[in-house]
Length: 349
Image (cartoon, rainbow, N blue to C red; front, side):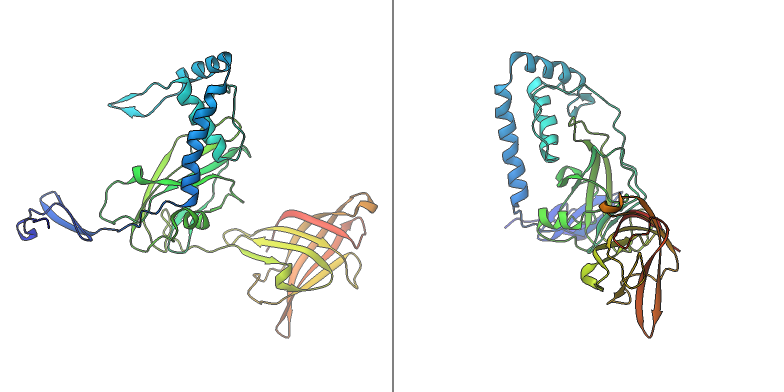
């Protein structure tokens, strides 16, 4: 048993049980200390094994290839120690870039890529770290080659002031959808549990160019887990999505409609089969709350292969009669074909 000075006299520093004590500006501060299970998940174990495999593969390179990695290593920087960046070896550069590539599901590079330093930092509108949601909105993806790498810690005491060194990779390469990145399932998969309300979390994130393995500037955010967003203190509103399984119809198939709650924009994918009205289809919503009631939406489509995939224009709206809501997608211009495909983004009102 460890004897600790009495906290009454302001001498208690460190941790005892689930309590952490520190002194700040002459004041004694006590905070709850999070207890971790220290379980290594399958995802984390696999990532560590890949490091060893990549390291061994370096020995199979030719002398010319090793020389190329040595030239690239001179342009890359390692960790900053005492104000100076450490120099990388050819072996270090090879492992670093290929670890990034492996995270993105890409094969190993044997030849060193051309050095580039123009990968931008991550820009976004808001971020939620709540018990239900870990999510970005408004991400500005530089190009389809750029993937989001997101790191996050386990639950830490809200009294901590730093913890980024404890962050682990939650998603090694994520492609945003409409500028959003819903990362909750990735956090749960890696950590084994969801974020805990009232605990503090440290996050860091950056863009990874999957074609080269180069990464952009790493940004850091620390936040208490709560319902409100980090930037604007807003409550998260998930997108509304309707698929074939949630409607009643014989006139469409492969239905997938997703509406953004923040702006009046919808992503629509549906195979039109037509009904008793030529070149138009309709379906009943089993759940009246499945879609917000919109009065007008314009969508671009194309006719069937037999009609030469010629363009078509459709108008969509929702009408409710006797507590039954029906979405109608009607042909308005272009080729007159009952069988058509809509795969586009449309605005609604």
